[in-house]
Image 1: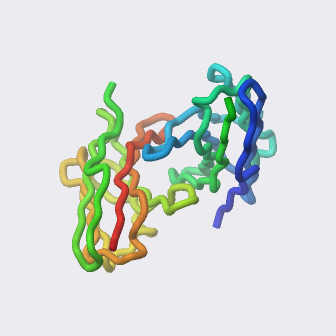
Image 2: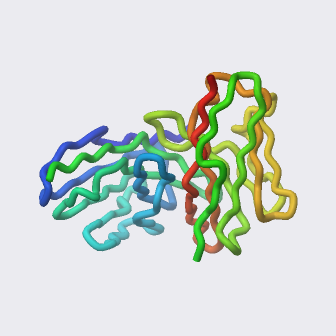
Length: 111
Length: 113
């Protein structure tokens, strides 16, 4: 089955630093999604990518859909304490609506 | 616009007891999903509904899990009987055409003792 490798598993950074995380897949995806999950809550959609090569921003967040369609990255600029949480990538392939999730990146921001 | 609503938010039960979770999707979203999220993992799909029809239930453990979406809006996921390994977060999500981008509810945190 499809597998997603998400890295890094965790990050400890200082407030104001930039952050980068990525996901790679063994299969081609048609859609890449990035979610953030806070403790005790469900995943919240940050950015959705629908075309290979697409680069999309949402405030301080930027994500790209890799041209091979097997990878995606998420950048966070000038991190703030409320960026703390678990970030998940998710991919969807073909006409199948099933999302395959990475294992998440735990981000800790020291003020 | 209201998001996906789930209840209860937390549930603690003893093993072998039944439990049910309820989900109300975003208004107008025809597709509804139930996921299970184990600690330290990403969500994994249990079942997907298109309106009232379960179109993908291949990952649902049918010996003890059941789900329904009788009128194509709200949905209920049931476990009977619950086992210790069922302790997890149960997430509901919904989506609509054309992108079918999935939006998640807050989840139900289940602890089986």
